[in-house]
Length: 111
Image 1 (tube, rainbow, N blue to C red):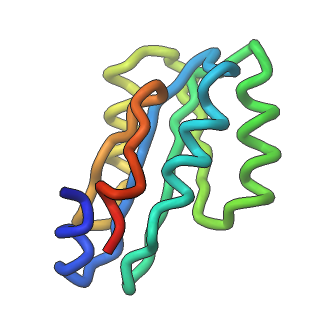
Image 2: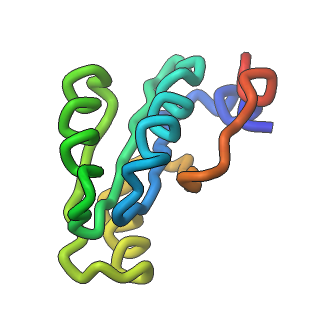
């Protein structure tokens, strides 16, 4: 249960990798950004594989809505590189990956 993470009093980082996810990326980010925030903070990172379908434009718009959102380019366009970028960028002790087509019900993460 994600709410147990907040009891550790550490900043939490959620990351997702994507490429050409125009149909699901906004719903994914909205879902993650609706989480109750732990006291120490929360950051959302999206590693984008140089999408060409409008995903990048959606992420740019969402960055202006959610101050916790960071977008990292993955010019290699491959999953292992995206995962390495996410881990490399992670400065926090608590890390979880949100898949673009998996949505966490509010009851799961409420404090």
